[in-house]
Structure formats: structure tokens, C-alpha cells
Length: 424
Image (cartoon, rainbow, N blue to C red; front, side, top):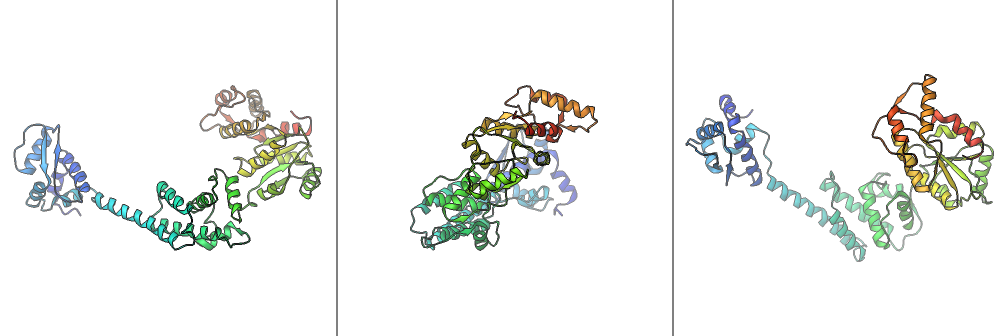
């Protein structure tokens, strides 16, 4: 209930007084919800002037009106409204916000967050280390992420100090898993996962303590964790491969050659790649595909070509493998989906490695689309924002003209044939 008599409320809520209440709301919220000061309305219409004259009980002329809030408050209290200015404004709209108090409260909360960090550092063995001052300064400049409450910020900063104290203890020996460390500090094995604020805080501290750059990608972040004897998760993500035949007599190279000889696919983890000296015969062409079905078909057909699958978006481990292969002189040929995300991924791979497009031209697309239509294959609409293909300026227009998306399975027979014969 508004507290205003219905007839009074209807009149006060009319268009002639709408600007008055809007400006009064702004002024009240700025000055601590106190009816002090004044407001000025310009370009006042005839209806506004008439209604303001009735409300203030004085004739108004001209096109500009100055209203003292204390006088308006008193007038409302002695009128049929029977309420003060604050109550009337709230009766006609949402509750008022004391913006001054809100600013002061926000500032107090920020001071509490950073004083809590100072206290945590001061009580830790890190207090005398020079880098902690720089760490604290950087954190203050970057601030608390949006959406993180002050209570959560205090807790996370204290956890960061605790983790860094453990990691940088000069008497510490042995290594710990990142999940184990996270569980001990936060209660959750995912507390230090990539992307969490806590992980970023700790990584920044490690980088400053060791006078090294803050990592900019997943591989560099794993290297930074290893710098303080923390074992990141290096087994859950994999890259799907087929037909890799590295030279060398260590057990990993022999294992890959044996699997290739038996036409078996292989999933390699970041942990595998750490210990693997992956050197293929000079001039080896490694084909790259986007969808695991191509690998499966190549294995079923006992193809001889080397193949790496991005499995869609290409996780970091995929590029770690491709980087290793590129560093030993391998060449690449790439095929992916004929849709806009597929073209974007193809651009990324081709730019990075100078890969050759593998049946990825406009003519290839048009032939596949025509064949699918002739066979009565249901057409998949091509959705999304067009992406130009770096290697063929005619591909994007051809795709846009037909409006059909083609996944790699549409070219499966052709791709398997290429992997079975001479390199294209």
C-alpha cells in the first residue's frame, strides 16, 4: 500500500508532476535522502505549470521553476497527501537508494578487503619478502572481480596467502598435486582450477616471487605450477592421433610405432608429451582433421598416413603436439567442417603452421554439397556470422550462396582415400 489516498495518488502521479518527482528522486538519492537544497525545472509546459501551481499553492509564471525541497516536503505533509517528500516519492515509485551511504559502505568494504590482505601477509612468513608489496599493489590496482562479494574476496585473498606460504616455504620438499593443494586450502579440489580468481592470484604471486613473466596460456601456466613443484592436471585432456611413427628407441616412440603398425589410434595427454621426444622422419606430412570419426575411419581402413584430430575446438594439448611436430620439420595438411566455426579453426591452424588446405576449397565444398543433395541427404542450415577463408577467397561466398553446412563426414570417403595413398 502507498499510504496515499487513491484520488490524491492519481493526481500526484499525473503527467504534469512526473518530472518533479523524477528530479526530486535524483536529488534525494544524492544527498542522503534528506529534503534539503532545491531543484530546477526548465522548459515547463502549461500543464506542468498549472499542476505545480496547485501543488505549491502559489501562481507560477514563465518556463522555469525552482522548487525548494524543504518547502515541498512541508507542503506535502499539510496537504491531502499527509506524507513527507521521501514517502511520497517512494509511494509513486520504487524505494529510494541512499547513494551517499551506498558509496561510503562500498568504500568501507574495499578498505576491509585490503586491510584483511595486509593482516594475512603480516601474519605469514611472507611478510618480509620484497615481492609481496608488489603483489599487493598489483592486486589493489586490478581490484576484486565483478560479482565477488567483499566476504568472498577476503576469504579468497587469505587462501592465496596460505597457498603461497606453503609453495614458497624454503624448507618444503617433494611435489603436490594441484587438486590436493586446492582441497587443503579451499575444501574443493577445483579451487585452483584455471580461470578461478584464486588461481590467478597465486600464479601472479609465484611469477613475482620467481621474477618471471605471468603466463599467458595453458602450457605456460602448467610450467609455472611445476616451477613450485605443483603437479597440474596433465592426464584428463588428450589429443587423438593415428599413424604417428617417431624415430628413436625409447619405449614411448616404440609404443607409438607399434600402435601405428596395428592401425590403432592413440590418445596422448600433456603428461605423455612432456616425456616424449617426438621426432618423425624428415618431411613427414601430418594430416589434421576436426572430427574423431575421420580417425576411426582411417583406422578401420588401415590407412598409412599420420593424422592428428583437433576434436572440434582444439584444446591446448592439440597445439602442444602440433608445435612439437612442427619443431622437427613436419608439414601439415588441414581439413575441417564446412561451417563458420570450422573455417575459423582452419584459419587458426593454417596461419600458425603454414598448413596446406586439404580438400577445403570452394570447388570441394560445392561438389560435396551437390553430391549430398543428389543422394537426398538432409541439408544442415549454415548458421552464424560468415568467416573468410584465408586460403580461398571464394569459399565463404560459395558457402553463403548455398547456405548449407557440411561436416567432415560428408568427405569421409575422399579423406580416407587420401590417407591410404600418396600425400595430397
